[in-house]
Length: 154
Length: 160
Image (tube, rainbow over all chains, first blue to last red; front, side, top):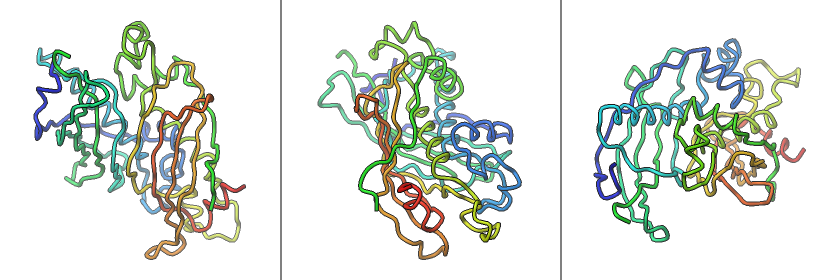
């Protein structure tokens, strides 16, 4: 296990990539964000985006999935994974460009800050800058994440 | 301007719902494995925080976005192309308490500020505080969202 003490500021990782298909954009948005430009191709053409695009929450939740897949691969390679707990939340989530059907988004995470928790001595808070970039190299999404990570020997 | 949060929906996070979302997006044992979750700090299966915010969004779109009902409005009018508005992003989201399997949450929105967009005629810049709480009143999630909304719509809709 990697504990709070092992976390290095500046450490970054490419978590993985995901291609957003038309079908999954519509399936997600039909439940969680049924705005016309996420569920209806014809309406999307008339919208400010000009074509069907993914819900921002779909883009965000897929970052989480890529992080989980990345950790599973790391474990499978016999390398230590972070002893992470819950997330207290995040800051400054930005949806900078639309994610269109067929776009492939590559997600990253970089450690920016770590702080020992005063109220919970067995945990520290690790902050990260997280991004999604499309196949053209355009940054489409970013946010400042936070997660609790266990202290060693506490 | 509205002075109080307005309820947009209620949702029960059943074990099946929690697991279904988490298998797709957040497959941590505490969200997908009831047996493993029993031995974890929360003492049982809890919903992914992403799931909670996505359910909020679903209610928000369904309650705010009634779409093109006015016949005089052209098909490219903001009210038609984006009845809810277009997301800008959000400043801070906090998950303040676990959502256990079986918890029923109340989803809320409150307009903090609304002003006409200087650069985009027909659109309003709206800043909201959005949240979810358990039926016993404990808040489990809150965030502030700024977005572009069709002019005059948000305040009128949530008063109604």
